[in-house]
Length: 288
Image: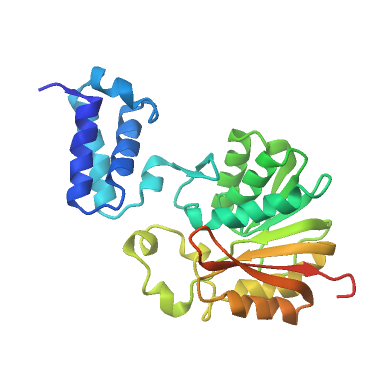
């Protein structure tokens, strides 16, 4: 029997619902649109478009992969963050809503400057720096990662979102000293690897089996990158420049102590959009 796009959507919806997917409607809609190569926002038309059997089978194959634990974002090859759609693959972490508040804070501070320079450390997909450049028209961003795959994705996202002329993606290891001639920055932001050794073994299978471990593991106590950034990279901030971190839900006090130890002032902790104390910020002193 010939099926419409809406028929396939309903089939996938019921499969996700029976599997206790937390968002069966979203998962079914995204996969249906992907498999059928249609606009996910024009669902009113889906009841009038008929599909061949191969497309129906392909939609169910994608659903099989998702139900087997593969993240939806990697199947789709893209994910939404801060109102923008970012290309993703298994070389980068999937952008998460937890990080949107950090992005907001970066943008708020960038808007207070003229032609602000932003340094995005451990950039991954580039979502933070690119969202800031997209929102603040005179911002310039340097995005740093030690993964060539991540830098490739960052450059692609910058092109797709039209900020490639104001963003440079640079290969560097954040645990080491910065490259020469980086210049100075008004804002430094990082959502670094912060999963502890113990937590790595407790991660959900969809994370542990698919997302890049080098973008997750932050050392035995999860704080290696915070120490390295404060010790080795803070000198790239202009006097009074701000450093903003995302951290694990139990790490904020420890990260604030590391910043204090390395000469930051005005240190604060704020919550993400879910009310979790996940963001730590502080200001670099000219006397440091």
